[in-house]
Image (cartoon, rainbow, N blue to C red; front, side, top):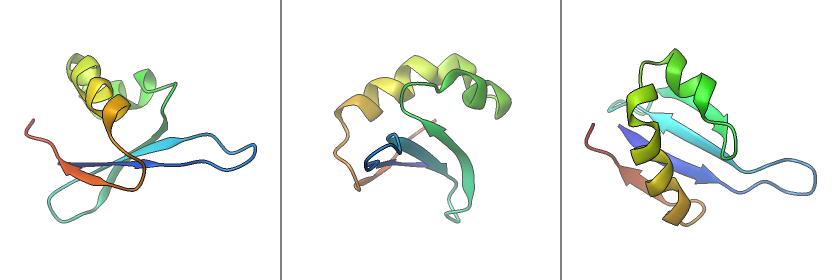
Length: 67
C-alpha cells in the first residue's frame, strides 16, 4: 500500500491518498478526519500508525507502507 499527502490550497484542506500495489485509489480523506474512511476500508486498527507516518510525510512524496 502507498500513501501520498496532498497539499490543499486556499479553502481546500490537505488530503491523504491510500493506493494499492497497482496504484488504484483505495481511500481519499482529509488529514484531520481519517476515522470514518479508514474504518470503511478495514484499517481502523492501523489508524494511529498511518496518521503518525502522514504527520511527518512531506507533501507530494509517495511512501510505501507495509501493512
